[in-house]
Length: 399
Image: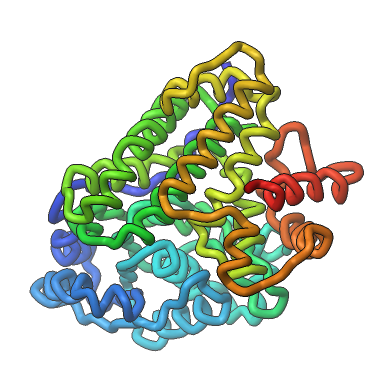
């Protein structure tokens, strides 16, 4: 049996209408002044005001920051931290997708730094300033309005570096939310495109963790369940945006898909695709996932067979053949969800890129992400340019 570590996790309340417990929950902690972090789109959908009303009813003063941007830049996180200090907040409430939650998560920690940071990259895994002694002084509540990122459950924020044009993990266990209110009703009505992107983030988290170096018996059954539920219910949610059971199933899978199983290895490549080519994160994850399966086909043969059973792929007992079968099925499924391969996506954007140029751009962007260290066989050691380059070529060559 593999050893594992059960990391710090938030208090989770799952259920329809749970977001309306916000005010009472924050008031019970004695919170008096709360910064609400969201984006203009979520606010315009009318999802923020009913939640904020519960804070006002609990006599909590609210300040709303709705300038969150997709793929949250480091500068926005610092600005948000400044507001926490400026308003003397003792609570932070994130309402939105992964970008809002990661912005708030990072800002809540930064606000308690001994000095105002000028470059958050120094606090990434490649810097030397992040420390478990850096703690949060405010209560933090996360309410996801999408079902995919799982950002509400983790102690890591994915930040876009405005100087270096890379994404990196701003990682500290003290970022973990005090409370997650997971209300599937907030996702009802989401259009098919965003639903697909979120669903593929769930599948990528689940499958990458299952085949990865930190896969373990504690979480394997839950993650396999996430794969099976998402595979079944994602097409239904896309076709029937107001199907409440479909939304419940995806919301359940989303927050359980990062359940202590370690690091979603393929995300090192998906983050590079997002930062360099501005591809929506879930779509980028879908592009990478068949290659992940092909690469891990022999080192994680038993787990890939288990995944095959959950998505109804017949197995042969030959590791490479089974890996290719599962990878091909994943590729077909993401196309049926309306997502396109890398080359097709560039074509739609009106961008021309040779395979050689793509590989040269991607290698350094992948290597700055610590998740690249979680591939088996390893791709970050020795002649890493050839190994990482081959991963990129496989993605480019998918048709």
